[in-house]
Image (cartoon, rainbow, N blue to C red; front, side, top):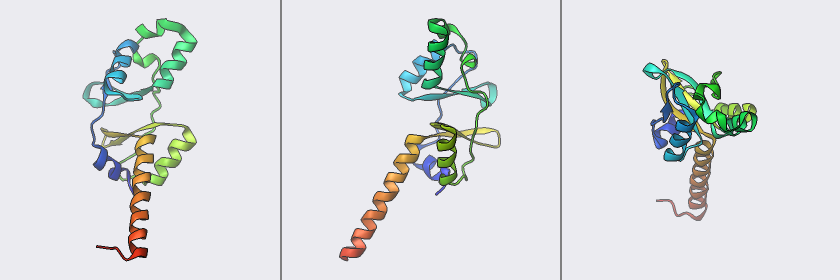
Amino acid sequence: MRISDILRVKGERVVTVSPESDVTELLAVLAEHKIGAVIVAGDGGRVEGIVSERDIVRALAARGAAVLTEPVTAIATTQVRSVVRDAALEDVERLMTERRFRHVPVIEDDRLQGVVSIGDVVKFRIDELEHERTSLEEYITGERA
């Protein structure tokens, strides 16, 4: 299985914020879209960072409420690890687990193609296992169509 399989089901829509946005604006975007992370992208869609709920909590704990008026770049992870559409699902699972990432951008030809979350990966795996189970049950009981 490939990351492109997840994007085909999930879609390629990506929520971004500009580097000039402040943390309060970022919070509004996360709440509006009910997501846990957002890509920081400048002009032309170039990925400049990623900010997660964890980043916000850590910044609040370290600097207090003043962080809310800071630009998102002050709390964003700028060393963004990304994958390509053709990446093997197992490799992405390993990357997410070893690096403790919950969101990974999919980038090809310097263009943001999508974002895959650990939830997307788990859902895909569960669906895959359910399909295999159903196929085996049908094979064993002779109920194949």
